[in-house]
Image (tube, helix red, strand yellow):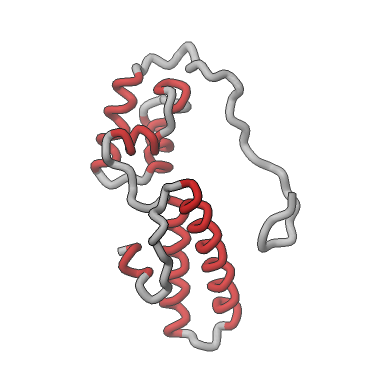
Length: 151
C-alpha cells in the first residue's frame, strides 16, 4: 500500500513474534513488569519509551506476552494513562513547532504546506479516537490553543 503523503511504496517493517507465550529465558513475573511500568510512568515516561526501557534495561522483550495486556492498558488500569494518545500528542507537538517557525518565517511556503498535512493527520486521528471512545466527543483540536495541550 502506498504512503499517504510521499511517493514511496515500501513494505519494510518489523514483525511481532507469532508465539504468544513469553520466551523461556524471561524470568520476570507479570506483577514485576506492571510495577516497573507504573514506576516509569510516574517519572513521566511515555508508553513507547517504557517499552524501549523495559526491553533494553530489564530484558523484557514483549510486555503483552508476559502480562497479557499492553502497556497503555496496564497504565489505564492503574490510572496513569496519558490524557490524549501518544501519537496524537506528538502530531500536535509537531504542528505547534511548525506554527512557531511560521511566525518567524512567514514566507516559508513548504512549511505552510506541511502544516496543512500535519493538521489533516491530526483531524483524521481525532475522528478515529472519538469513534473508538478514547477521546470524548466534545474534544476539539484548535491550532491557536494547541500549545497549551503540548506544554
